[in-house]
Length: 461
Ligand SMILES: [Fe+2]
Image (tube, rainbow, N blue to C red):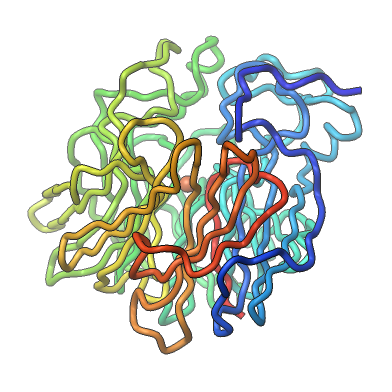
């Protein structure tokens, strides 16, 4: 008998403990016959009540959800990722690891376990479907059944770490990514890797970083990759002294490291600018000698304590910003898209790294609770359209699915999960991606709720 979850878990954050399949979900409206593929979602969903202060996004066991869409029908599957920690804790019948912000709560049997929870997002590349994690290797899962195939180290070529959000070049098919050079928690520089479209690592270079930060996302243009360094700082000595392992060090500057694709550590150009947290990137592209970088920006990250361990309150919520970076002048000009707050940005990834018009995010409709709105940003007109499902409803990061392989940028569908609090269950809603403020073209009804998660992907078939 396992322990009950504490009442700090509320509403749609209460873990969902069932795994299974639903073969043909009911649909209101109609899915277009050209919409074929899988919508993946990943997110933290602990199997046991945690030991210590639970940080959710870093600590919960990854549960993956797949909506296989074909011929106007939807088959749903959900499975936990069977990580080392998941298997050990299942055998023990309780949580063994401590949490990121309270590691000392670890059980003796948990001290040698990897913290990797495989809970951040899904990356589809080289014929593989990978569940990523913050500072660790991804786990490969079966694209249809979601069964765990195991840790994926690219044949040993990426031994320690692949960042949560690598970037895939739609023209070359290459995946570009950064990772830490040493296994967590040893401090270290970053390593830049290029993985070809078959999944083979073709280039590796070490990059010296200004300081040891949580590098969660990156930018990529046609010719450059851009490493991000914000003041969410790892400090093992501070942790040994009883302080937080990751803390927000407000006095540090932010940095963008601009590196030609396939370059080495000597080729990087650093541009510094005032402290902020660029949690997630929407896209980036080149405009002459300048780089246009679209990003979700916080004045100060919410997820980390101060170095003394205290948690700030009353922080400003994030919003979509455009940074115009001039590497020669060493400047970053910044403008905010509009007054809306948003997180979890996505775009039509067929245009990754190139000039583009359409972006999307989850967001807030006004009063800040959970994410309760979906935004469509039109960079050409400056117009934002917003879908708000209504009182008591929550949303998650959407995904864009093109209408077909030759469709124009932004021509397609937007898929999003909506949690309906009054019914305590979720729907998958599908919009014309140009008209998310209109009625959805299809609503796929789930019998259960899908816990608010992190990121996902659309894999066309
Ligand atoms: Fe993320």
